[in-house]
Amino acid sequence: MREAFITHHNVISSLGFSSEENFEHLKKEHSGIQKFQRDNGDDYYSSQVDKELLDKEFTKIGDVTLYTTLEKMMLLSVDTILKESNLKITKKTGLVIATTKGNVDVLSPDSSFYKDKKRAYLPELGKQIQGFFNFKNEAIILSNACVSGVLAVAVSQRFIKDGLYDDVIIVSGDLVSEFILSGFTSFQAISDEPCQPFSKNRKGITLGEAVASAIVSSEKNKGAVQIIGAGSCNDANHISGPSRTGEGLFLSVQSALSEANIKSKDIDYISAHGTATNYNDEMESMAFERLNMLQTPTNSLKGYYGHTLGASGLLETNMGIESLKNNTLIASKGFDEIGVSQPITVIEKTETKKIRVFLKTASGFGGCNTAVIFRKIAD
Amino acid sequence: MAKELYIQNYCSIKNNKVSLNGNLIFEENSEDIKSFFKSVYQYLDPKYSKFFKMDALSKLAFLSAEILMKEEAKKNIAIILSNNASSLDTDRKHQDSINDKENYYPSPAVFVYTLPNIGIGEISIRHQLKSENGFFVFENYNTNFHYNYENILIQNNKSEAVLAGWVNIDGDSYEAFLYLVSQNGTIEHTEKNLKQLYNN
View 1 (cartoon, chains in turn purple, yellow):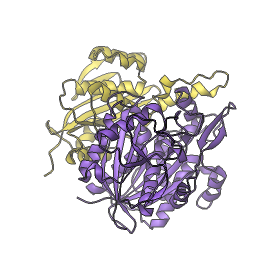
View 2 (tube, rainbow over the protein chains, first blue to last red):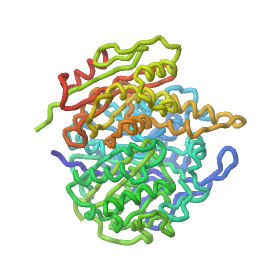
View 3 (cartoon, chains in turn blue, yellow):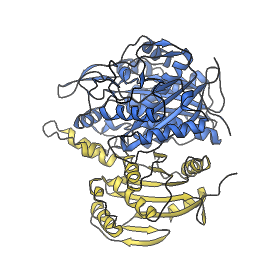
């Protein structure tokens, strides 16, 4: 069976328009979270992409008036990795788009695309991306709540291993819109301060927006990481809250470890979900305890980006790959005192450390969980 | 060696009809989706009151799964569903609740269903399936994707069987075509057969 590698990746976020630029900010522990104001005048914290800069950059590749904000971010991100890789798009090139809400902001009468009734449909987003780059295959759109971005990595790895495609381009993204803000506010899930994953003082999530993209390939290049195992299991417990015992996450990590043929002690670093809600962070600590991973250095990048929903899994994967490349563990921003029942090892200080294998996890509404394991192929 | 896979059972819910393995099992000319789904629920009689809290997409996914899972003992069953409109039907309801600043009433009970995979969660809870799952979106039912991904999940031992298919809700229109792929059955699991059963 063939192997699958991530060869190129990109992130467009509040912390920059390339993975390298983003990682430089993480190394300096710069957060992209700032105070914003909602339509009703309420303040909220969030991490958002500079739209003027986006249009300025997008002008280099297309007409800014023809595309929605999310489309521009996705097109720019995919354009970047295609150019970096010189990849030739053939019938054996797949396109996977991961998003929870896509262009849902166009449902608002305030949107300049409001009259285009088709634009809110996800297949239309797929057509925009497919058509722009002339992909030969219909986009495979994955909309599986907050695991979408990392589940897209798992799905792409499976297609590559199976030989269905030689390369898969993944692009994942979501925006901070009034739709999302109003919904999470109604859930009383939003923190009134920048989020503090795994902390005793955590008060809920901070919403963020980003687009992340990656090329998953059957052929490795210099600096590639191998995707060595993946699992995605449901809690079968509750649609809007995680399992108390971390059951689905536990099973997902077990499935990924078994495929990778390694033990949990072989993992050098965990890039956790860490949304900073009471239940999520507690659930993760339970799962990591059951997996004997309490000693494994763990962080959540939500303190830098907020929760970027469908983008988060791939965004955090890409930054995890940078951690491997740079042998650098990034401090879990916003963490002070441990606030989960199982004493997980939260990274408190950014440090240089030789790391080779990392685990990315995510969990979401609908009881979904995903775990993917990555290994550096050479130093 | 590759496992031989079959479409063990299949069902559809569309045009006021419910059928299982090509045989009509229920029919009713209802006024709207809500009352039709309620009638199908009463016919299947799962005694599961949570059903009435679900949005239309989850109801449709739940009812289709109920038909196929009634006498199913296997537990490591993956769930791979797809559709065209994602959760737009419920998205529009949430949007309506926030459009008017004077009449602003977003509800967590609606918002939670603004994700298409919630129906997968509902099926997982109902049948205690702690297994692989994913919700995908395509212009039309994509047999090539479904055939390949279902096959990959079973061949790579990620699951023993796959509950899969198309579940779409968009305004007044609804359509479900679900099936169970496993090593049991007589209809070979091929792209051609999936296409044929879907079009029937």
